[in-house]
Image 1 (cartoon, one colour):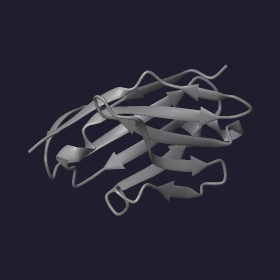
Image 2 (cartoon, helix red, strand yellow; image 1 turned 45 degrees about the horizontal axis):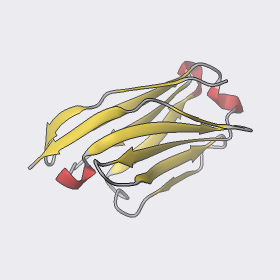
Image 3 (spheres, helix red, strand yellow; image 1 turned 180 degrees about the vertical axis):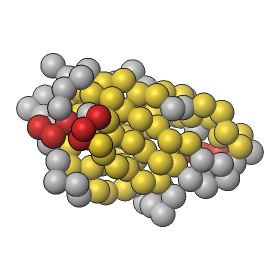
Length: 114
């Protein structure tokens, strides 16, 4: 079992920045990949970014150049640095961990005002 706790969401104006964190209850060194997804009201959950155990990263086209995913193995935490935020970035941001199973956090709300 892996428990994930997200933090760092909030209300920010367009053009602003936020840094989200996802703290895992176990060593993330052994987790194959950790990802961020977001879900806007009434919409499906969309992929945002992923980082593998080897440090490889990938991003959704809509956030490339603005968001950066990183990991701190010593703190068992993955981060999502979000810059140049846009109103369409608004949603609940959820952390996902993949080992032999898939685990999700509860999410943190990000609201970007225009």
